[in-house]
Image (cartoon, rainbow, N blue to C red):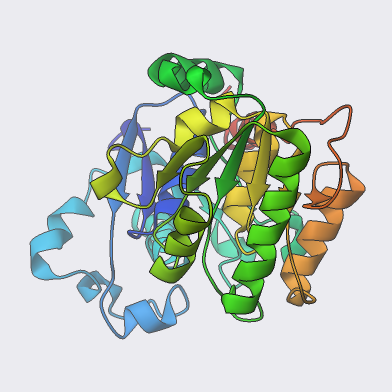
Amino acid sequence: MSGLLEECWAITDAAAGNRRQALALAERLGLPVRPLVLEPRGPWAWLAPRLTLGADLALPPAERARFAPPWPRVAVGCGRAAALFTRLLRSSSGGRCRTVQILDPRVRSRHWDVVIAPRHDGLTGPNVLTPLGSLNPIDEEWLADARDAWPRLTDLPAPRIGVLLGGPRRGIPLDEAWTGAFIEGLRALQRRDGGSLLVLASRRTPPALATALRNAFDGAPGLHWSGKSDGPNPYPGVLAWADRLVVTPDSVNMLSEACAVGCPVHTFARTPLPAKLARFHHALRKGGLLHDLQTGTPLHQPALRETEHIAATVRRRLGLL
């Protein structure tokens, strides 16, 4: 291992979901973790990770010193931009840096030691691991820490229903018609069970959707968070204290994290989902992990926690045990 840093680089672009997955895995590999946010410029950004010719110029001059030897012992990347750098690391280090890529890199998996892609992507290969959902840090210790950090949420009436809002994507408009039907579903849920609604927007949530939810339940027990103007993001506390979670159908990451909590998880889709996402939803439903918004609360909800198992497999394959 001469010339290598005894650490793990967690490489991503600026996307929060990619950073979360890379760090969740890297922190379980038993090495000090160095997070790196690297944004290649064109044409490498457009063709990552396929285009490697001249890739020493992919980063602006001011950022190149951050991606330079000594190389790490292990690098974990998430997303196509990161895949360019994890691919380069394997060759630049003479094969001594072991590389792990999360999400389908859209080129042959042989360019990395391990590729981790969710099952609904349909990627296969001897070095490919296929969890059901996305990787995340949620386990009992994480939930306990979140409860300690957000004790005031216990004052809200039970059942506490966390409502996690994503945003539109191709085939899932989350438009005015969807919003109206979604609000009616939440109203029916609250009429039936009482309790409180804890509504959280994300960076992708259209302001109109967040505002409609806020207006619809103004004065009802609960909270609404749409951004920094509402104070610190209570997302960890909402997950930790929720008796039930309702998640918009668009985000694999949010659905995976909700299903990791171990409370009932519901979603609402008015029209057929895009094929890949439909396969993911179907697998969650088949495993008893996801339910329609109109469905009653199941008596038992398993928790989807795959990150530690994936990390153990990666440690074994990379000789980190």
